[in-house]
Image (cartoon, rainbow, N blue to C red; front, side):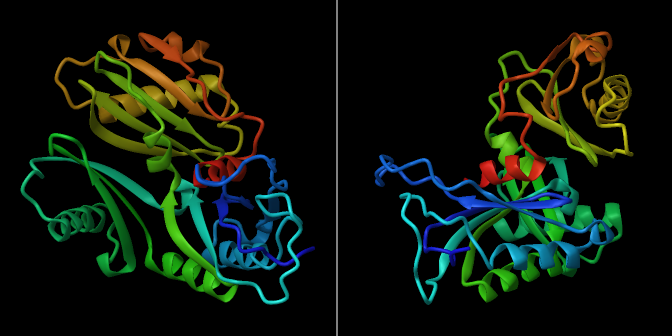
Length: 293
């Protein structure tokens, strides 16, 4: 295959697959030569499933080759590749999240980072020095959405990128990217549920604001069992609701991620809604690559 061109790339990292494609051009670039080449897929071997070394080995292999055409449809023939810019989005399997409540209005960035690190350290018993933290304060300053990933994984991804002449300019977990694409309906109380093969995540929305985050690891077969997922969603609601008197029968649940039958959820919640989202026949890594674009 051709060497990578110097077109910017988008990388989606799942638990079993890495998908690499050319990033969509900006408004200043002509789109008349699109579509670009089909994204390339690289498998993480089963015996390295869930390991950082398996992820990094697959990423290293992915950065050696590229689709035969760049974003303008022209074949790449560079003998010596120029550094390329990449956005990379990881499956949430590789990190952790939290929504913290308090008054964050007067805190500086370093203080907010310390708050987030203290939470992850106290909750998971993880040395704060071993984590890289990202955070966002909700408008109004009363809630903090924090994410963390292992520093060894973060640094390893950048090192693998550099060895493949790629500058990783954006490295994020999937959930914050998905939340950025969601417009919570007016009204206020909702449970946002994100289902992947290995993980189900829930974000509690109360009065249009972040209230709590929780997650549930899934066993083989769970992700395709709507009744089992609805049962777990009820448990996540009970753990996440923070306002006294809030009942699941009065709360709407929004279903994201894997295609899921809403009927079992409608029996437990006020309503179950599956908003429009990327095609569900794509693999998880392919959908993450689309967020990276």
